[in-house]
Image (cartoon, rainbow, N blue to C red):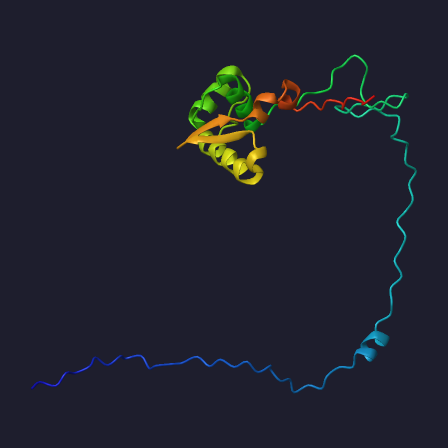
Amino acid sequence: MAAKTAKKSKKPLTVPRRTNLPKLSLLPAAKPEAAKAAAPKAEPTPAPVTPVESTLDTPVPGKVAPAKTGTHRKIGKAAPTRKPSALDAAARVLADAREPMTAMQLVEAMAARGLWSSPGGKTPHATLHAAMSVEIAKKGTGSRFRKAGRGLFAATARAADSTPAEVSGIETGTPELS
């Protein structure tokens, strides 16, 4: 029988040494008290004081100055309205449709009605589908959506009862009880 010959490597086998011991210093340890006493403490120099003009009465471009009567917006201008989010717009579309829709159909319907449009994402329908699924999972029966089939979403009674003010983000006052 022929003896098998193993190839011999020309490089020697080296094993790195690993130790968990701390490195020992041959120098004596410095005493912390001596180091503190040797370093003189530097006093901070005060910054030069310059007169500052009052900016309370000067208008800032783009900002509304508070009125003297305590209100914080100018008279005659309406409060800025917030655009509805994708979930708010989807709840509105589903409540009006009264039939189950896919996320793709919802995105197209929201854009057609001018309620919401994608800010430039490639898959807004996937994001909307995920957001509606998360709301269903978190809120359960209090959700505005329910699953009506595979990939289909329908509005619940909560979505149908939402007012346009709730969808647009405008807060309404609570009615007083008498």
